[in-house]
Structure formats: structure tokens, C-alpha cells
Image (cartoon, rainbow, N blue to C red; front, side, top):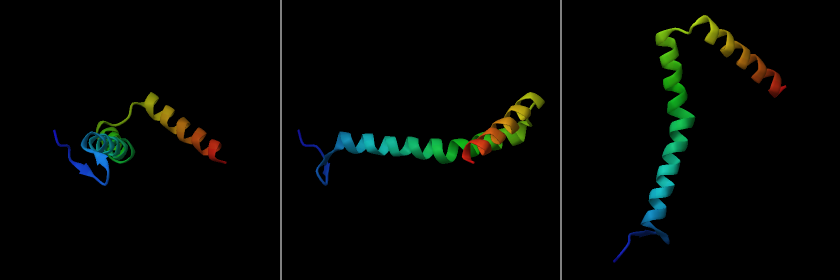
Length: 64
């Protein structure tokens, strides 16, 4: 049985690398944009808004 090889990597490894890069791209780029869009459409409840503001404030303090 012949396997496709790209620069010495078997097909199974290429598939794994592709899926991993797709997951990284999804969670670092698309997922935050979708969540932001959903929260803008729905409107945040007052409690969630307070927690979001507090989280951003703490994140700013952590970076300094």
C-alpha cells in the first residue's frame, strides 16, 4: 500500500498537522469574532456586562 508523502511526512501526519492548524486558526481568530458578534446581537445582561468589565480591568492590571 502506497502512502502519499510530502517532504518525508506521511499522509497521516499531514492530516494531523492540517487539523491542528485549523483548530488554532479557529480558536484564535474566528471563535472570538463570532462570540463578539453574538454578544452584540443579543445584548449582554447587566451581570455578564459587569463581569466582562471586571475581567478586562483585571487583565489590564495583570499586564502592568
